[in-house]
Length: 139
Image 1: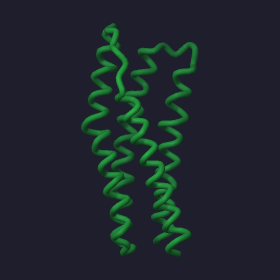
Image 2: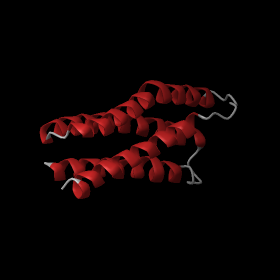
Image 3: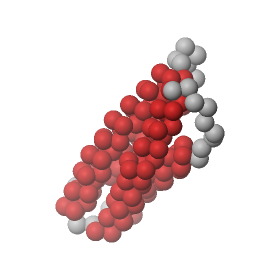
Image 4: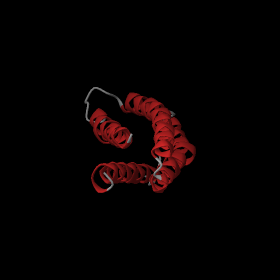
């Protein structure tokens, strides 16, 4: 069961890398992809990914309960906090900005994207260390 939980953390790690740090930045390098379309695709991608993340987190919490390692709930609580902030604060704010940009408004730079990226990086660190501790420290 510890191996399964570790695999879930690593899977989540890989999804974050693939969606947030690979596919999303690359999309903006495509010369024929207009900014409005790229923003709309990004918005849809992150909303679907957000639902997947909640599913993964629920699975992680359930499996953590069954392996009887309650100290891992600290990792899960941190992941929950980061995901909740993204879901209920950052994504709605970023959606508002996308809506305004698509209406042609010129917006001042915002730190919202940076906060989102820092949150994604924090989730990567949490997933990595949880998987590492499961496999090597507490084998």
